[in-house]
Amino acid sequence: TRRAEAARNEVEEATRRAEAEAERAKAEAQRAQSEKEHAASAAKRASEAEALALAGERSSSQQADLEAKVALLEHQLKETQALLTEAQDHAAHLAHELGTARGSLTGTQEELDNLGAVLE
Image (tube, rainbow, N blue to C red):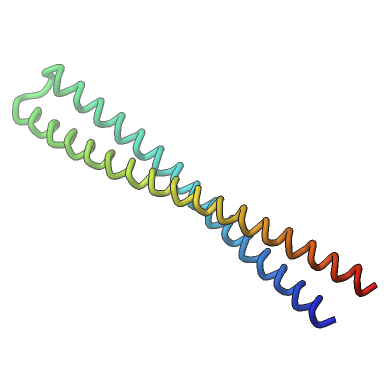
């Protein structure tokens, strides 16, 4: 019947949207992981540069360069951490939306089942 077909189409469309949203959430989570790894690498480089500067293994001008690099790396680390937090928040929001979409699909499927039973 037309109502059942329209409901099936609605379920299929909602399923496609939910799957697309899940893929976006997965990509966002992967990006967040990459940002986390980048932040860890930047922190390690900053630590190494700071250790060299503190050990006095460089001349004063080289030490000033290293301190500038440390400051830049620390700034980049803060930016990366902010991006990571934003990506994690977005991934959590997408996961919530996906859960809501799945709940809606379940309700629509139940309605289709009921309609099918009535039509039989």
